[in-house]
Image (cartoon, rainbow, N blue to C red; front, side, top):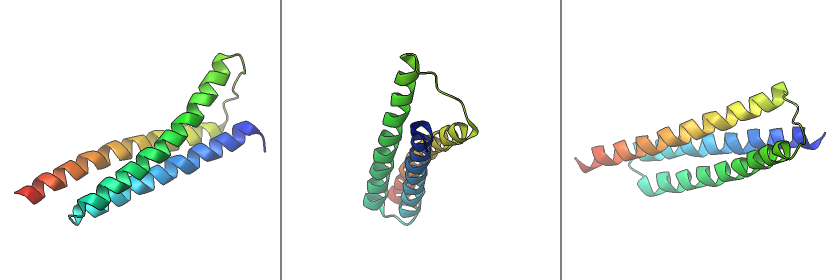
Length: 104
């Protein structure tokens, strides 16, 4: 397996982990477990940072002249990452809403 495929699989891995942590955060917030929710958001952020680092490496390599072959696997990996980012942002909003409801 070449480096590009490996990086695509790592993007999928870290994106999937981030999405899972974000969904767990929503579940914790729903049950009033706000410390656990915030801890899961932090875990999601760590996974997204790992994925972003891989993505940045790919972009820098391409900018340096190493042409990146666009494959279905890489498109799938980018899709996972973008979905994870969206779910994490929405999870943060859900947590804020659940906190507001709990205060009332």
